[in-house]
Each structure stands twice: as C-alpha cells, then as structure tokens.
Image 1 (cartoon, rainbow, N blue to C red):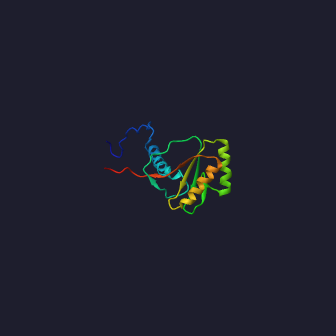
Image 2: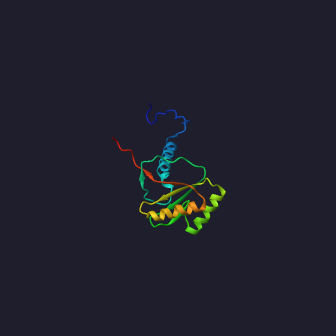
Image 3: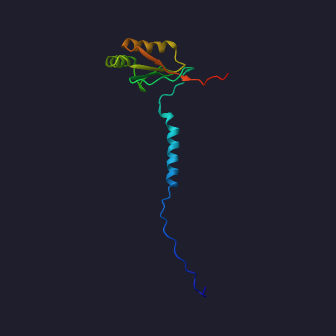
Length: 142
C-alpha cells in the first residue's frame, strides 16, 4: 500500500437472484385475511341459532333460504320480504321445481307460532321439503 493511495478492489458483481421473501410475506398476509373473512361472508343476517346434536346437512341442488330473525322479520335468500311476496315467490319456485328444498333458519327467540306460519306458507306454495338449520353442539365426552 502506497502513501495516499486507497486500496482498489473489484466491484461486487450484480445480484442475479430474485428476492422472493417480500412476495411470500404479502401472500401469507393475504391468506390470513381471507381465512379470517371467509366465515363472516356466509350469511349477512346475524342470528342466535338453536343448537342440536345432528350432523351437517348435505348439499342440495335447488335450495331457498328463509330466515326469521329475532324481530320476526322474513328474509328470502338474505333479502327482506313480506309474507304476501314470500307466498308468490315460493309458489313460483315450487312451480319451476317441486323438489326445491327450503332451508328455514329461525332465531331461537322467535315464537314457535311464527315459525309454523312460515312453514305453512311454504307448504301452501307446494314446497314439501323443508329443512331446519341449527348450530351443532360439540359432542359430549364420556
């Protein structure tokens, strides 16, 4: 090393590998967001469903969802509906496909008579396949 002169060395070669760590981090964050939000998107109407020990219902090709919330309001496929309009829509569905299944979700605080009225509307319209939706309780350990 000479006086006043700096040591010269070769410059580093450019890096040829792609750094995928930031991309993986972003993808994992998106995955966590989707995992957390997916259960919230199943139904927009908040209900306190009664619990039962039955199993999960199988999927049916033609299904209508009828909800009776805690204030006894009716919703068909998550859209508010009046009893008269419900009667017409159910009759129309029964005419198109008599094997259409009606999933009846009712808050456990709804009076039994209101649930029976909703069932009667469906049966008068010609729908005989009515399924009741309830939350399952965890199995009791013995």
